[in-house]
Image 1: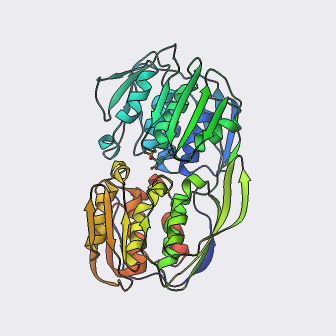
Image 2 (image 1 turned 90 degrees about the vertical axis):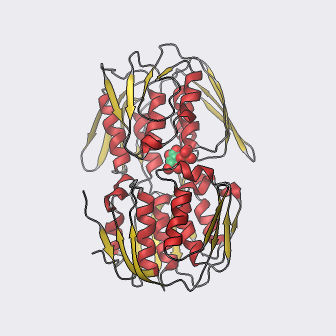
Length: 442
Ligand code: S3P
């Protein structure tokens, strides 16, 4: 067991430039795609977090050759349907919903049953959302009708394309179907509620036949399977979800300035920026560029004294889905009552984040009202803490660890945070950057 960490001082003012670790969604997607490409793909700045390490370990079990030499990761792919399926194979997705849901799609041709397991948190999460569409492709799951891990999948040699309607705004569901479609003979059609579109962008870069028609609420996607694609080198940009903690640390500290270099600012991920700017922040993108279809920028942010409450438009939910915990913390310090609605998906994450977010705010004396997947947060601009606070984080949720660290460093009080290593799921450099900005960890 890793020892808890303690915070007893607020962070002093800072004026710095930092890099955050590589984007998790892109790191997992690149690794999976490279394992099915023809030839050697290299990634620079691939995220070296537990979720990505689980991805690499899973693919190695399927016979994929992966090397790391300090500068880059190299994956030697043998094309579509080239994995080696050993007897009694178990794949462990660890804490990663993205890996668990996406790798099932890659096992669609397996002639043998493969067991998929995960940690305590992942084993509580819903898998029916990908089992249902994958079954339509013709594969079987065991036990039939089970909706959580562990489950086993047995594939087919001949996979038929499907028509699928994704209505949760889940990029994992959409991506799982897109990946399965790569091995189907013919065209798969998807109508998907808006969600992050890294998989579609990667497909285009790999020259996989994909057509995307974007309308206001839905994307209509058509992808043709059975087309091999070539290897792809990639320089993974920083993760906006990891950046969000440092954006809020800066906003809520007294008089600080921060630039976060080279972050993926794909519009399907920047809901947090739109929301915080609506609340009075002045977050700016600088040095904007396009890299392999993804938008990249340096993010500039400074401390703000007056933050306002927000009635958050639900159309921003999907593009801010991983940032709500840290947004709730800003709402706790804002003037007025903030309202966030239709957040049922937030309770489907590594922990029940809508419920836990509310409990953490209550612990620090902030009033909340939880009704019907919505939360009202009664903000208090004069919120200053003096007491002792303990964060149990029993499901080891990395974003609860990071959110409470930011609370401890900006609001005061004496904090004990258990299982601080949970942050290694997504952001191994987190505490190193906290120290670099002057945060004192005991
Ligand atoms: C992710 C999609 C989101 C997000 C998760 C990463 C992805 O999940 O919460 O952290 O990389 O596709 P959902 O698809 O369940 O919304």
